[in-house]
Amino acid sequence: MMKADRTELSLIGVAIAVAIAAQFSPNWLVFTLTLAISTGLVVMGVVMLMRAGLVSFGQGLFYCLGGYAVGLGGRFLGITDALVLIGLGVVATVAIAMILGLLVTRYREIFFAMLSLAFSMILYGILVKSHGLGSTDGFGVVDWTLLWFDSETSDGANMALMLAIAVALVIALFLNRYFKSSIGLACEAIRENEVRVEYMGISRQQILYINYVIAAAIGSVGGSMTALAAGHVDPTMAYWTISGEFVFIAILGGTGHVAAPFIAALIFTLVRTYAVELAPNAWQMILGIVLLLIILFLPKGIWSLFTRKKGAAS
Amino acid sequence: MTEILKTEGLSRYFGAVTAAEDINVTITEGEIVGVIGSNGAGKTTFINMVTGYLPPSKGVISFDGKPIKGLGPRKLMRKGLTRSFQIPQLFLELPVIDNLSIALAAAEHKQFQMLRPVHTPERLKAAEEILEQMHITEYRDEMVTAMPQGARKLLDIAIAMLGNPRMLLLDEPTSGVSMEEKYTLMDTVMEAVRARGLTVLFVEHDMEIVQRYVTRVLAFASGVVIKDGPVDEVLADEQVQELVTGKQHKPAATGGDA
Image (cartoon, rainbow over all chains, first blue to last red; front, side, top):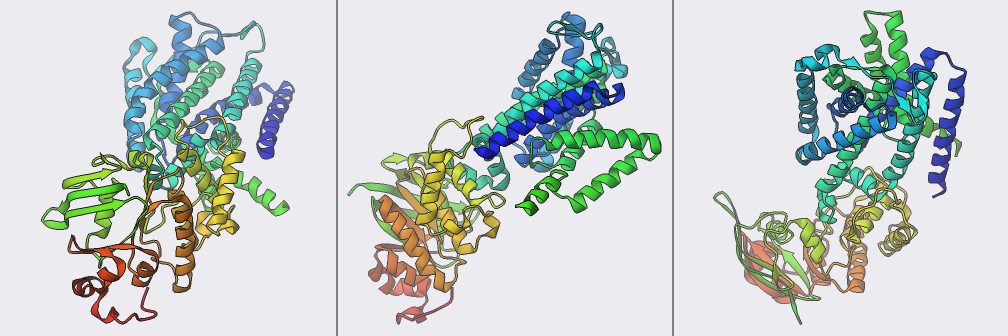
């Protein structure tokens, strides 16, 4: 119990610290941070599935749905409030995930991975063919508001970051509890041994379904935040390489802690930014080498650096 | 004496192979029944059919007077019929305390929670009591991978006994356990069984274990029950000696292979 409280306090502390530090940061860093936090949210969904032993190569589906909900809600429904737009994305995503979940939670391993990939590529295909929505170019997100602030008159980038931090904090606090709850532990139990789970009288299907839908909803929030920060959405959000990036970041961070995906997402975004600057034609290779080193030396992800230090101290 | 488990004409075929044929068994509440037979005699097929792991080709199984054929492990477990496994089925990469906590949460038969921690003080206390009863307290915070086979068997059986079951099926509880450990393991298990008043059906290869802990024996050979009765009577039967225990076993030999 003590430990849980400490994690929550440190999460809140870090969120406040980042929010304050952002006030003195250059604009590019504020923007990068916002994107990293948004990406971190989607990766949280991937991590939730990984804890249950499933690897999704289609989390981009929900990322894209969240993004397009923001774009479409602003454009066709005239909604400008960011929270309402995010909520719209969550509702749409949960509705779709509840249908897809019935099917995909019956599959494991490569079959789950490929099936999730297939669904996200279907959305990609539909969006590419939708000329009214800008086809491969996508379209711009309307200027949004947040409660009584306006992203045009106020400092938009800063506002997006504050929103991202607040949303990420709430989700991180929730997931920190979720991972220690009976459903959260049941997911790990399913990963470890499905036969035993079944003989305990637990419905694997039900647990995986709930987990899948929540992961989708969080992915949608990440997509919405990205759309709000970047001011643009396009079909590549659902493309499989984007989903692959989420898996990459999830492995980079590890599944050990709720903060890991955010740290990994930040490292990923920064490495990519600098790699592109230093070696415009070889940045993928640099990312590949980084992942290789992580898998070789930190198989449980970057977070194991922290736990190792704690182990040595005690 | 009320009957708790009854099978009538239970059969299972795998293509042309007969794994079990016309098994008629009635077990009354509180009995400790041993199931013996050489490899491939149909013991595990029988257990698997009774626990819903394998659908029977023919026949009726009733538990507590109601038919249970076709019910999956989940529903059977909720009716009070549980099992342990020959190879312990545990969550290897999770701590022992988590294995028990999740099992205890499941045994409550309530909707799982999303926000309340699985480690409630009551569950931790219950888990610690079980660890003590099974004499495996030392592994409380270890991963299951750090436990020796005997301790894993005990944990597997302990998990099967959660949630007030009425009948427990033990699939070779002493296989893979060293000679010295066997009796302490069985003593621990039987003590827990008696404390809970469970009916037990257990598959066993070791005849000394069978003689020591069981009141009644079902002897299987080639998919049929060739003998059903009190331990001494069954073990003294010529056909059983020939097909199951092996002739040379007749003089109550000490030792023997595991």
